[in-house]
Length: 284
DNA sequence: ATAAGGCCCTGACCGC
DNA sequence: TGCGGTCAGGGCCTTA
Image (cartoon, rainbow, N blue to C red):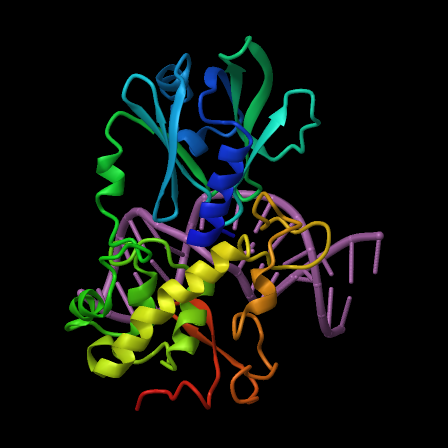
């Protein structure tokens, strides 16, 4: 599911639900690998600590806990976070549950943060040194430092543009959806060598990336798949509506919103990619 | 640095 | 209904 806009939405949901300020009074881990393999170490690092702040870095959710510990959550393909009453029924897909209590105004301990993850790819890591993980990430594409000049420096000597944009150590937060959308906006084919982009194309891409991300955030994320049993919904599932504004992603055979040509699908870096063959000309 | 392929996992969906 | 193949929004690892 989640790329930058979806992770952003999840964090906003948790903040609005009152997660910041709550204290972790215990854990229930039912899939050890989610927490890095050692349940006791994980539990002892987080138990008793207060959630002091929530933030995002790339596709990571970062919860800073009291005592200098940070909890890093990566949702990968199917992870979701729910702040729920402890009496709410379990789905069977909860891999980690953080039992919570509220300090104020009077102590309640009837809620828990549930990490729901059918495919078990997600991770929840407790560490005193989050920089070890987060410092490896590239630039935040919504920061003011991400501009045409900076993007140009990332492209020098590099090969195909799409794998470059998906590389989290280069730019942090883009995934398959928003890369395809940004390339369509900039009229760049995903196989184009990054080092061959012209100045005008770099400028277009530098504008398209934040454009598609901000639109995604405004729309509360993209929710794909159909029907009731969609595993890939962000928390505000019923409100996510960016899928209605996608130009090319998973729109194979449908008309390009700009020129009407049928959208085509191809594989780039083992990921499905979607292009308008008229707007995005393939390299030689 | 780059690219391919395997792997981690489960569920939805489609054709037979 | 069952079975097998394909696909999935991510990322890590190994091999050329």
